[in-house]
Amino acid sequence: MQLTFRSERVLAVVAHPDDAELLCAGTLARAQHEGAVTGVCVLCRGDKGRSRRPVPRLAAVRRQEMKASARVLRAALFLGEHPDATLQDTSAARKKLVEVYRQFHPTLILAHAPQDYHPDHRAAAALAEAASWFCASRGCRTASAALPAPPALWWMDTVGMTGFDPAFFVDITPYAETKARALACHQSQLRRAADADFGALTDLQRLQTQARGLQAGVPAAEAFRPSRDFKRARAW
Image 1 (cartoon, helix red, strand yellow):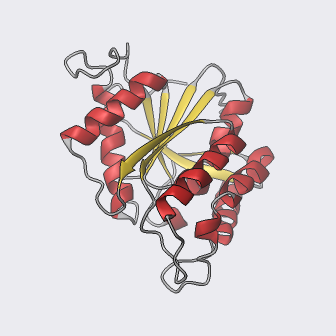
Image 2: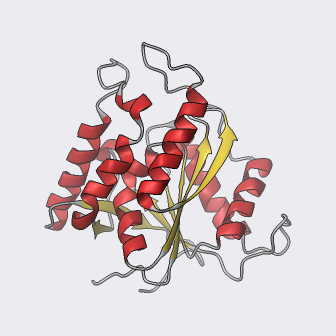
Image 3: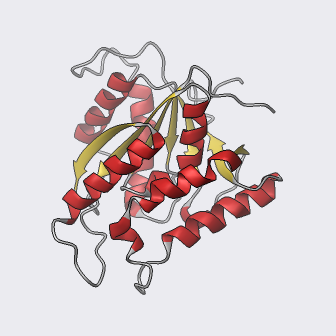
């Protein structure tokens, strides 16, 4: 199957700064190269990802790191204000994300898998899915008008590939370096490589990209599974 992102508007909805870089930055870079408009919506502040040597004003630092990464990816950026470990699928959170969708006009949403390891990831998955429906509902009122149709929704790979059965792979071989450069913007997290409760994100990114590439028969790939919910699937 030959997939092209030409004329699409692709928005990644993630919990924390650096999640998109781990799971879908190669696809965003490829989509942008093929003519799509791309964006990243980060729902949490990233304020609790602290190393043994605390970083002063961590949330502000991570906000700047995410801005730098978005510039590498040439993606629009939407930043939420939920403190880490508090993200929930609430009516207020849904309404804020619906407004983001209506501002960006996505045709495709990339979202955390509902079974990913982190509670914030799972909450982000629920919010991304709910907003993908209500953004096209005229009865759900926000500052912007309802979209003409719900965007398609793809679930991203889990961190570490645990429990995720891919339906297809996106070849990101020409964009693996861009993906790595985007992650390199997140120095506050890369410095946590030796922490016992964390890990080396550069190794995780590289090994997961290579492993999914090996499965797909290419040097580097990212894995996805499409939502099969009513009006959230598409024919290609």
